[in-house]
Image 1 (tube, protein in one colour):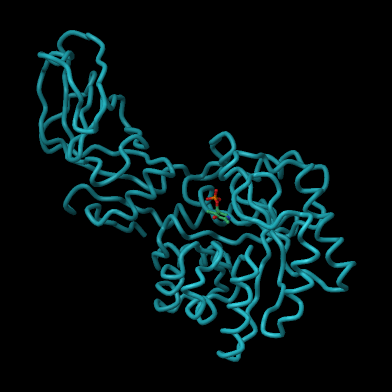
Image 2 (spheres, rainbow, N blue to C red; image 1 turned 180 degrees about the horizontal axis):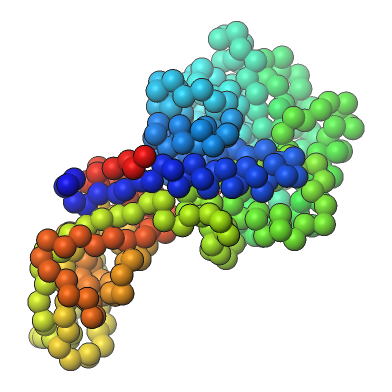
Length: 354
Ligand SMILES: *Cc1c(COP(=O)(O)O)cnc(C)c1O
């Protein structure tokens, strides 16, 4: 048995989810770029995605892309966060395509690509209301005019991001607008855009209810492939697995205790004033997982017990009717934030299930 806490990763379930997504999106000639950032470019996960039929892998960090390349994972690699000016050399060397929003960076990429004798492809991200990254629509033509002058840069496509910062829905109106912008760019500059990337795991609602796919031919999917949910309402996607990842911890204390703390109340270890309900005596258990390991607010126990709270190294449980004993293993589902923290945590062992 592995030491706890550990994160069990079911590669077959991830592969299945990627196959489901490909089926749904390919039906409308929309290609799926799988976003590996929550998996930190873990080669086993990348391999499961490619086994499903994914051809393009996107990650926000160049070090994750380098990790996958060094593991000989053969895909088209896309850097999906605008490159750091301090990192253009590695971006040109390792990423086939990068998402961009700043002329200063594109200029530096052009210079570096020329030096490396490479034509670097870029996808220009357009700001369409979510107010995270992107060029404002009124500046697109001016920016593209400049980009087309760099002979070591290929304007490979355009894209937009939704529901990340501003919580803006990628609805039919937004998709129409993106298609229209693509058409206008192609007409004005007499070029063909290979990729028109319409969004992320927040776009399922649009796919289901769309009236017109327009020119959208690419989608960037992360969370839906890993957790089997769309992200606008966190609705489970039919036929997808929601339990590809399991966090496992072990019970280190199990006792009947009063539910109310006893004494004078002040701040807890995290500077909060805790509030408790009097439920009388309670069967409580402690699991050896804490905030040092993972974002415990994003954990959902798989059995009928309640998380009362936690500290750096403990999760306190109301064991309810479960007869928990010291040494018992407790399984948790993870939301996106908890998954990200568990993946990046060096104190959570990763266990791959074939
Ligand atoms: C993270 C990210 C995605 C993937 O988003 P999910 O909600 O996980 O599908 C897509 N595009 C960009 C630019 C991102 O940063």
